[in-house]
Each structure stands twice: as structure tokens, then as C-alpha cells.
Amino acid sequence: MPVRVLHLIGGGEIGGAEHHVLNLLQYAAQEEVIPVLGCLVKNSPFAALTHSLGIQTTVFPMRFALDILPVAQIASYCRKNQIQLIHCHGSRANLVGRLTSKIASLPCISTLHSLPEWDYPSVWKGNAARYINNFTLSWSSGFIAISANFRDYLSLRLRQRGLNLPINIIPNGLVPYDFSQSEQMRFNFRKRWNIPLSCKLVGTIGRLHPVKGHLCLTESMKILMKDHPNLHVVIIGEGPSRQELEDLLRSAKIPHTLTGYLPDAWKTLPSMDLFVLPSLSEGMGLVLMEAAQAEVPIVASCVGGVPELFQDNSEALLACPGDPIDLARCCDRLLSDPDLVNRLTAKARERARGFTVEKMAKDTAAFYYSILNQ
Image (cartoon, rainbow, N blue to C red; front, side):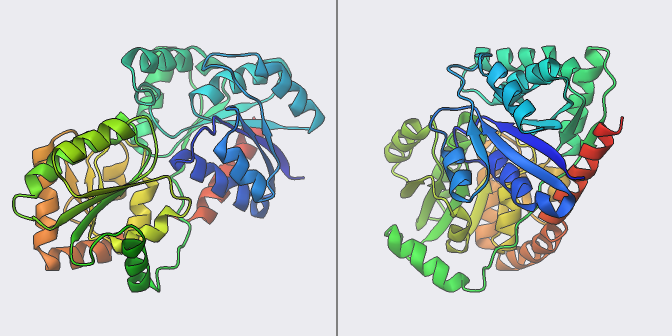
């Protein structure tokens, strides 16, 4: 019989974790899993998206980050819908999902997509999230880490609390996108946003949050423009750092385009001459595999699971996190060396082919069954 799983996630934005969950929701049926979704933010854009796709979605709105009132509603939902396992994604979900599992006597697992202390703009909120996550660890039945780096992080937290719980490494899976019309996609995007076809377009995709390193990217672009005056920066995404970022780009007189959130951001990749992921912390970087699939050369911070995905000078160039000089150096190498670009993009595309959504869904389902059979 298929296992019935409730995925819980904040859903206040549509980022990497949301895309990961969406893939699990859409591919689960192939693995004897019946998934449903619970979002925890009122007027959730992710809930609106999944509902439009015909996915059973319920919103259990939390009034604030530590609000546990939705727990009773979630527990009732689990009983009525015969949920057999709760799968949590993110700090909010971990709090209410683990509490619900205690009340409803259900197994509960969590996927670690990002480090909780990096998920909030302020230090004290990040530390509070880490403390609460650590406090509720013992209510979990197991964990999924999207990289070995995150597995090690979880292992340390568990040892500190004297816990021995299963952790499976299951990397993100890549949806195969169609880039066969890449030249037309390049032209269409640049025309829509009035970006000259002649410029060197450096782009990034991700939520506008301090952890994503956009401020470091801005500083590196100042350096890079000295040797590449025809540079243009495109930043795709939305978030709390937008105004600060736009002010910095304007004051530095860097030609730029901030598009906000785009639902099919992958279609913008062929327009870019260089993709940069300057994150200060990163679980794996699903967008890096999308850029590799589009054969766009990549510069990324050497953090988290990124070096597990791409090796420096093999599939991408990896820069020291938070170092605009090193980031500019890596970007300059790729903008100046077509042979290096050809070598790296070919190897990156081949590497990305090994990370499939089908394998991710299969491994996740196997972990569900191993937890239920304990």
C-alpha cells in the first residue's frame, strides 16, 4: 500500500526548498507515495502555485515564527487524511511538525535544505531558530541532508544532544529543461528587459537575502568593470535585501537589472555569459545544476555542498565566500578565456546529468519505508 505523507513548509516564498518539495510532490506517485502539502504562511505563494497544479494543499497559518497554535489543526488533518508520516522542510515546519508528531504519534523526518542560523537577516533570530531546531531534534525519527557537508552538521548537533538517529544524504534532483532554442531565449530575455545584446551579462538567481551574498557580488562587479566596461548584472529573485541591493548598484553606477521573482527563471539562463552564486552558505545549489544544463559557465562560493557538486577548475571556478576580490578574479578568468569556458561547461553539464528527480524521489521513498519499518 502507498504511504501517505504530509509535507510541511513555510511557503512564504518560492525558492530552492520549495522547488525541491514540488519535485517530490510531482514524482512521488511513481514511488508508491501519496503526498499532500501543508504551508504555514498566510497567503502563501507556494500554496497558490501547488493548488493551481492540482496538488492537495492546505494552509495552516502561523501568526509568527514560534506560533504553535496550528499544531492541533495539523494533528486533526493527519487523522482525517490517514497521514502516516510527516516530512518537514525548514525551521517553522520543524517546530510544528515535530510537535504534531508527538501529539499524533506519527514518525516525523526533516530535510535540511539550509542552516537555520543563516535563514534570518538578524543574528539573534538565526541563533533562536538554531536553538529551537536543536531542542526538538529528539522528536524526529530521522533526517535527510542534501549534501555530506550538511550530514556532518546534523551529526554534530545530534551527538551534542546524545542522539543517534538515521541521516540519509539525498541530493537535489534536476528537472531536464529544454534549452534547444537557447539563442532565441537569449534574444527574448534581453529584449524584454532592454539589456544590450553586445554586453557581457553576469547573472544570478536566488532570493534576495544576506546569505546569498549579493552584496559581495556588487563589490566584485565594481572591480570587474575596470577591465570589462561593457558589463551588465542581472539579479533574479525577491526578498528583504532588494532595496539595499538596488541602492548599492545605483551608487556604484553598475548597469543592472533586478527582475524580481520570475516563475520560470531557468529560461533566463541562456541570456547570461556568466552565472555567479556568491552565497555565504549553501546546501547544494540546485540552480547551479540548471546553469550547467544550459551550458553557462559558473563561478560559485566554495561553501556547504557546492564543492561536492562541482570541483574547482574542473566543472566551475570556486571562490572564497565573502571575498569580492577572489570572486572578481574568478569571473575575470571566465570572461577572458573561451577555451576554459568550453572545458568547464562541458564537464559541468555531464556532471549535472547524474542528479535526477527520479533518483531523488526513489531514494526519499525508500527512506520513508525504512523509517516506517523501524
